[in-house]
Length: 203
Image (cartoon, rainbow, N blue to C red; front, top):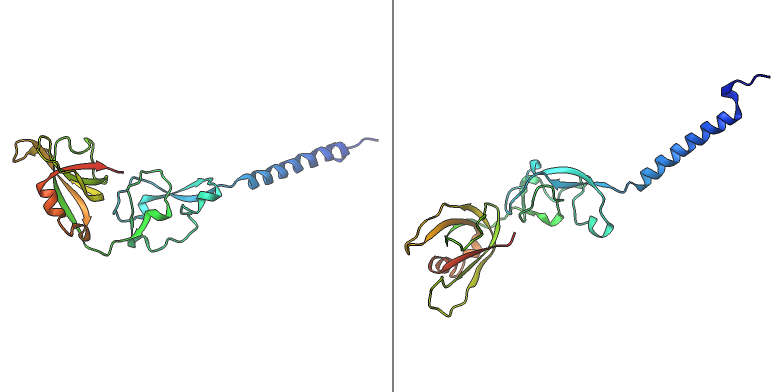
């Protein structure tokens, strides 16, 4: 008796085994895929910059349970409309967006404070968006026992100017920093205008 190939029990068993292993493999792969889509930065942002949809890109990553809640998933609602939010700190493109990175736009007034910074008293590659602490103290060669004090903390660079000759004959540049009006209370303006300013980058 001639048995047709497609009716051979051994062939049918082989086909069923192949199909079974394929389905099982697909299920194992699906079960093992613990990645999820999160928001990442598509470009570098500076502290205080308004949040834009152009800043964001969706990426698929795998995070451990103890840190996953710190970052924003793409299937979650933002705490507020994007146009009412600003970036809390400088962050480089490609980094995941932390929940704490998005803040409501400041309701207090803000100002741009000019600082006269002598050559060598700030990082050589200081750029817009950098965060700096502003220290004021005696200048090089000053005969004073006064110690430098930090008058502003984590303020954002708005603009760095070209070097020019200061009144004392040394090179200096005018650097604009973004500050809340509440930070200018007290003697801050008088201190930065009369002392030797040093900028220390913190981010």
